[in-house]
Amino acid sequence: MTKVQIDRMQYFLLIPNLLFPKAIGITAGVTARRVGGDAWTAMAIGFAAGTLMLLLIVFLSSRFSKLTIIGIVEQVIGKWPGKLAGLMLAAFFSLGFAVSANVMTLHLKEYFLIETPFLVICLIYILLCMYGVILGIENIIRYALLGFLGCLLINVTMIFGTIGDFEMINLLPLFDRGIVDNLAASIYVFGDLALAAMAIGMIFPMLNDNNKAGRLTFWAMAVSAVIIITWPVLELGVMGAGAMEQYVVVCMQQIRCAQLTRFLPRYELIMVFFFTFSTFVQSATLYFCAMYSIKQISGIKKDWYIVVPLSLVLVPITYFMAKDHNNYVNFLDYPWAQICLAVSLGLPLLLFVMALFSGKLMTASSANNSTGS
View 1 (tube, one colour):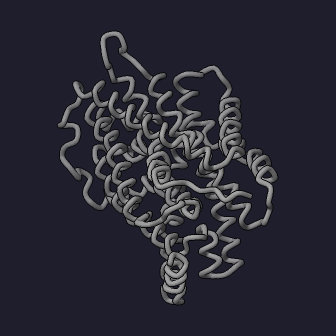
View 2 (spheres, one colour):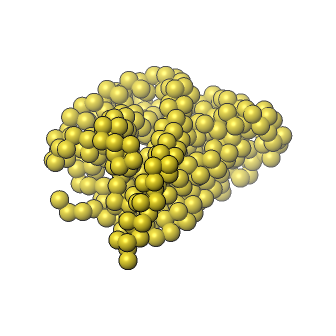
View 3 (cartoon, one colour):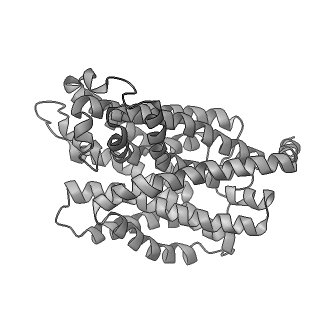
C-alpha cells in the first residue's frame, strides 16, 4: 500500500475542522446550561487547557514520529496494552463519529427535513462518510481547505448579520458563577478537543514534515479558539443565556437572528452549506480513525473488510444517540465530556511519564535525530 502523506498546510487546516462543527452551537449550549452567561469564559479556559494537552500529544508523536498513538502504547508499555488501547480508541472514535454525525443530522432534521425519518438521514450521512473513508484519508483532508473557508465565511456573515443586536450587558459580570464553576464547565469543550487530539495522534505519522510541529499546532489551536469562541460571545450578546439554554442547536437560532440585508433576512440554508464541508471532514476523519484503530490491532490488510462492517455498527449508535435530541444533550453532558477528559488527558500523561522513566523517550529522540541526519 502506498504510504499516505499530508503536508503542513493540510495538517494546520485539519485542526479547526476537527473542532468547529459541534463547538459553536451544541457545546456552547451545553456549557450555557451549566454556567449561563459564563459559557464563553468556561470554553476559553477549556481551550487553554486543551491546547496544552494537544501539544503534549504532538510532543510524544514527534519523539515517536513513525508511530500512531496506538504504536506508542505498544512501544512504551507493551504489545497487549497497545491492543487494549487500540480497542478502546476504536470504541472512542466510533462514539465520536456518532456525536459528530448527529451535529449534521440534527441540523437537517430539526430545521430542514422535518418530515424525513431520522434513520434515513443517518443512513445517507453515514454512507457519505463511508465513501470518503474508502477514497482515503488524504482525500478527506483535502476538503479541509473548503471547510476552513466555510468556517470563516460563516463567522463573517454571522458577525455582520447580528452585531446590531449585540448587547454587552448580556456578558456581564465576568465569572458570574465563580471560577470553580467555570473550571468545572470547561470540561464540556473536551468533548471536541479530545476528538481532535486523539485523531491527531493517529494521523501525525502521515505528516511529511514534522519540523516545528508544536508551533504549527499551537497556531492552529489559536485560530480555532478565535473562530469558535466568537460564537458563544455573540450568542450570549444577541440571545442571552436564558435563550441559549433552551435550544439544542444554538448556532441555528443565532443564524435566525441574523439579517444581512433587506433582501436576505434569513440564510440558514446558506449557513449549512458553508458548514457542511467542515462537518464532513470531522465525521469522516473520525470514521477513518475508528477503522484504522481496528486495522492496527487486528492486522487486517483490506480496508473494505473493516469499513463496511463498521458502518453497520455506526448506524444504530448514531440513530439511537440522537433519536431524541434531549437524550443526545444529556449524553454530551454526562458521561461523554467526562470520558473525553479522561482519555485525552489520561492516555498522553501516562505515556509521557512511563516513556520518561523507562528512558524510551530519550531513546526515541536519539533515534529520530540519527534518522534525520
